[in-house]
Amino acid sequence: MLLVTYVYDDIFSGGDILNYWILALTFISVNLDFFFMLIFLLKKYKLSKVMIGYLLGNIILLTASFVIGKALAAFLPEWLLGILGILPIYMAFHDDDDDDGEKATHKSEIWTVLITYLSVCAGCNLSIFLPVLVGETVTNFLITLVFIGALTILAVLVIKLVADIPAVSNMMEKHGEKLMKICYVLIGLYVFWDSGLISHLIALF
Image 1: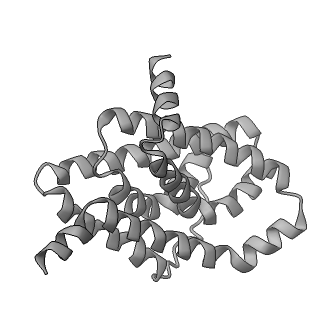
Image 2 (image 1 turned 60 degrees about the vertical axis):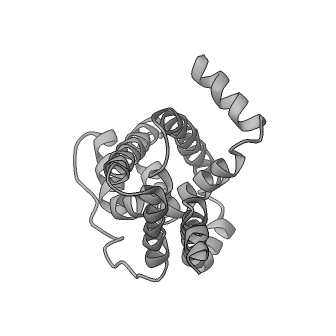
Protein backbone atom coordinates (compact mmCIF):
# COMPACT_ATOMS: atom_id res chain seq x y z
CA MET A 1 0.00 0.00 0.00
CA LEU A 2 2.86 2.36 0.85
CA LEU A 3 4.49 1.66 -2.51
CA VAL A 4 1.22 2.35 -4.35
CA THR A 5 0.80 5.64 -2.47
CA TYR A 6 4.37 6.64 -3.31
CA VAL A 7 3.81 5.87 -7.00
CA TYR A 8 0.57 7.89 -7.00
CA ASP A 9 2.19 10.90 -5.33
CA ASP A 10 5.25 10.71 -7.57
CA ILE A 11 3.24 10.58 -10.80
CA PHE A 12 0.67 13.24 -9.99
CA SER A 13 3.08 15.60 -8.27
CA GLY A 14 4.61 16.15 -11.71
CA GLY A 15 8.17 15.59 -10.44
CA ASP A 16 9.41 12.70 -12.56
CA ILE A 17 6.54 12.28 -15.00
CA LEU A 18 8.93 12.34 -17.97
CA ASN A 19 10.64 9.25 -16.62
CA TYR A 20 7.43 7.26 -16.90
CA TRP A 21 7.07 8.26 -20.53
CA ILE A 22 10.66 7.18 -21.15
CA LEU A 23 10.06 3.86 -19.40
CA ALA A 24 6.92 3.29 -21.47
CA LEU A 25 8.75 4.22 -24.68
CA THR A 26 11.65 1.94 -23.73
CA PHE A 27 9.32 -0.97 -22.98
CA ILE A 28 7.49 -0.61 -26.27
CA SER A 29 10.67 -0.23 -28.34
CA VAL A 30 12.51 -3.24 -26.90
CA ASN A 31 9.42 -5.45 -27.08
CA LEU A 32 8.12 -4.37 -30.48
CA ASP A 33 9.59 -7.39 -32.27
CA PHE A 34 8.35 -9.75 -29.58
CA PHE A 35 4.80 -8.42 -29.92
CA PHE A 36 4.61 -10.33 -33.22
CA MET A 37 5.73 -13.52 -31.49
CA LEU A 38 3.19 -12.94 -28.73
CA ILE A 39 0.45 -13.29 -31.32
CA PHE A 40 1.63 -16.82 -32.12
CA LEU A 41 2.23 -17.72 -28.48
CA LEU A 42 -1.25 -16.54 -27.49
CA LYS A 43 -2.80 -18.71 -30.19
CA LYS A 44 -0.85 -21.74 -29.00
CA TYR A 45 -0.86 -21.37 -25.20
CA LYS A 46 -3.23 -20.19 -22.47
CA LEU A 47 -3.42 -16.44 -21.82
CA SER A 48 -2.40 -16.81 -18.17
CA LYS A 49 0.65 -18.94 -19.03
CA VAL A 50 1.87 -16.49 -21.65
CA MET A 51 1.36 -13.56 -19.29
CA ILE A 52 3.30 -15.18 -16.43
CA GLY A 53 6.20 -16.26 -18.66
CA TYR A 54 6.42 -12.84 -20.30
CA LEU A 55 6.26 -11.08 -16.93
CA LEU A 56 9.02 -13.25 -15.46
CA GLY A 57 11.22 -12.52 -18.47
CA ASN A 58 10.82 -8.78 -18.03
CA ILE A 59 11.54 -8.95 -14.30
CA ILE A 60 14.72 -10.98 -14.87
CA LEU A 61 16.09 -8.64 -17.54
CA LEU A 62 15.15 -5.47 -15.66
CA THR A 63 16.85 -6.76 -12.52
CA ALA A 64 19.97 -7.67 -14.47
CA SER A 65 20.07 -4.20 -16.06
CA PHE A 66 19.69 -2.49 -12.68
CA VAL A 67 22.37 -4.60 -10.95
CA ILE A 68 24.87 -4.06 -13.77
CA GLY A 69 24.07 -0.33 -13.78
CA LYS A 70 24.63 -0.07 -10.03
CA ALA A 71 27.99 -1.82 -10.36
CA LEU A 72 29.08 0.69 -13.00
CA ALA A 73 27.75 3.66 -11.03
CA ALA A 74 29.90 2.67 -8.05
CA PHE A 75 33.05 3.35 -10.05
CA LEU A 76 32.06 6.02 -12.60
CA PRO A 77 30.50 9.51 -12.29
CA GLU A 78 26.89 9.87 -13.45
CA TRP A 79 27.65 12.20 -16.35
CA LEU A 80 30.18 9.75 -17.76
CA LEU A 81 27.61 6.96 -17.59
CA GLY A 82 25.61 9.03 -20.07
CA ILE A 83 27.89 7.56 -22.71
CA LEU A 84 25.78 4.42 -22.34
CA GLY A 85 23.21 6.30 -24.42
CA ILE A 86 25.26 5.14 -27.39
CA LEU A 87 23.93 1.60 -26.82
CA PRO A 88 20.29 2.21 -27.84
CA ILE A 89 21.42 4.43 -30.73
CA TYR A 90 23.75 1.65 -31.87
CA MET A 91 20.88 -0.82 -31.64
CA ALA A 92 18.81 1.44 -33.90
CA PHE A 93 21.34 1.11 -36.72
CA HIS A 94 22.44 -2.45 -36.07
CA ASP A 95 20.59 -5.24 -37.82
CA ASP A 96 20.41 -8.29 -35.59
CA ASP A 97 19.85 -11.51 -37.49
CA ASP A 98 19.35 -13.48 -34.31
CA ASP A 99 15.86 -12.12 -33.58
CA ASP A 100 14.27 -15.12 -35.27
CA GLY A 101 15.92 -17.64 -32.97
CA GLU A 102 14.38 -21.05 -32.62
CA LYS A 103 11.63 -21.40 -30.09
CA ALA A 104 12.33 -23.54 -27.07
CA THR A 105 10.55 -26.85 -26.92
CA HIS A 106 9.75 -27.39 -23.26
CA LYS A 107 6.69 -29.03 -21.74
CA SER A 108 5.88 -26.10 -19.46
CA GLU A 109 4.05 -23.33 -21.30
CA ILE A 110 5.34 -20.69 -18.87
CA TRP A 111 8.90 -21.98 -19.26
CA THR A 112 8.56 -22.00 -23.03
CA VAL A 113 7.37 -18.38 -23.14
CA LEU A 114 10.10 -17.32 -20.69
CA ILE A 115 12.92 -19.00 -22.62
CA THR A 116 11.56 -17.72 -25.92
CA TYR A 117 11.46 -14.15 -24.60
CA LEU A 118 14.95 -14.32 -23.10
CA SER A 119 16.43 -15.79 -26.28
CA VAL A 120 14.83 -13.14 -28.48
CA CYS A 121 15.00 -10.01 -26.33
CA ALA A 122 17.80 -10.40 -23.76
CA GLY A 123 20.39 -8.46 -25.78
CA CYS A 124 18.06 -5.59 -26.62
CA ASN A 125 16.64 -5.28 -23.11
CA LEU A 126 20.02 -5.18 -21.43
CA SER A 127 21.40 -2.69 -23.97
CA ILE A 128 18.41 -0.35 -23.78
CA PHE A 129 17.30 -0.58 -20.14
CA LEU A 130 20.84 -0.46 -18.71
CA PRO A 131 21.43 3.22 -19.56
CA VAL A 132 17.87 4.12 -18.56
CA LEU A 133 18.08 2.48 -15.10
CA VAL A 134 21.72 3.20 -14.33
CA GLY A 135 21.02 6.25 -12.14
CA GLU A 136 17.90 4.99 -10.37
CA THR A 137 17.58 4.33 -6.64
CA VAL A 138 16.37 1.00 -5.29
CA THR A 139 12.97 2.54 -4.51
CA ASN A 140 12.60 3.92 -8.03
CA PHE A 141 13.67 0.56 -9.43
CA LEU A 142 10.92 -1.21 -7.46
CA ILE A 143 8.44 1.33 -8.81
CA THR A 144 9.83 0.66 -12.28
CA LEU A 145 9.21 -3.08 -11.83
CA VAL A 146 5.58 -2.39 -10.89
CA PHE A 147 5.15 0.03 -13.80
CA ILE A 148 6.75 -2.27 -16.40
CA GLY A 149 4.86 -5.22 -14.92
CA ALA A 150 1.58 -3.37 -15.45
CA LEU A 151 2.60 -2.51 -19.03
CA THR A 152 3.51 -6.17 -19.63
CA ILE A 153 0.07 -7.38 -18.53
CA LEU A 154 -1.63 -4.62 -20.53
CA ALA A 155 0.40 -5.46 -23.63
CA VAL A 156 -0.61 -9.13 -23.50
CA LEU A 157 -4.28 -8.25 -23.08
CA VAL A 158 -4.23 -5.70 -25.91
CA ILE A 159 -2.37 -8.03 -28.28
CA LYS A 160 -4.86 -10.78 -27.44
CA LEU A 161 -7.66 -8.46 -28.54
CA VAL A 162 -6.05 -7.17 -31.74
CA ALA A 163 -4.29 -10.37 -32.83
CA ASP A 164 -7.04 -11.22 -35.27
CA ILE A 165 -7.21 -7.78 -36.92
CA PRO A 166 -5.43 -7.96 -40.32
CA ALA A 167 -4.89 -4.19 -40.53
CA VAL A 168 -2.86 -4.18 -37.31
CA SER A 169 -0.62 -7.03 -38.42
CA ASN A 170 -0.02 -5.38 -41.80
CA MET A 171 0.87 -2.01 -40.24
CA MET A 172 3.31 -3.58 -37.77
CA GLU A 173 4.89 -5.62 -40.55
CA LYS A 174 5.40 -2.55 -42.75
CA HIS A 175 6.39 0.09 -40.19
CA GLY A 176 7.27 -1.82 -36.99
CA GLU A 177 11.04 -1.87 -37.55
CA LYS A 178 11.19 1.82 -38.46
CA LEU A 179 9.20 2.83 -35.38
CA MET A 180 11.43 0.70 -33.18
CA LYS A 181 14.59 2.37 -34.52
CA ILE A 182 13.13 5.85 -33.93
CA CYS A 183 12.32 4.89 -30.33
CA TYR A 184 15.87 3.61 -29.77
CA VAL A 185 17.38 6.90 -30.98
CA LEU A 186 15.04 8.98 -28.78
CA ILE A 187 15.94 6.87 -25.73
CA GLY A 188 19.66 7.28 -26.43
CA LEU A 189 19.34 11.05 -26.75
CA TYR A 190 17.34 11.19 -23.52
CA VAL A 191 20.09 9.29 -21.68
CA PHE A 192 22.68 11.78 -22.99
CA TRP A 193 20.61 14.68 -21.66
CA ASP A 194 19.33 13.18 -18.38
CA SER A 195 22.77 12.00 -17.21
CA GLY A 196 24.26 15.49 -17.53
CA LEU A 197 26.68 14.37 -20.24
CA ILE A 198 25.59 17.09 -22.68
CA SER A 199 25.75 19.90 -20.11
CA HIS A 200 29.17 18.64 -18.95
CA LEU A 201 30.52 18.67 -22.50
CA ILE A 202 29.08 22.15 -23.10
CA ALA A 203 30.76 23.39 -19.93
CA LEU A 204 34.11 22.16 -21.22
CA PHE A 205 33.80 24.44 -24.23
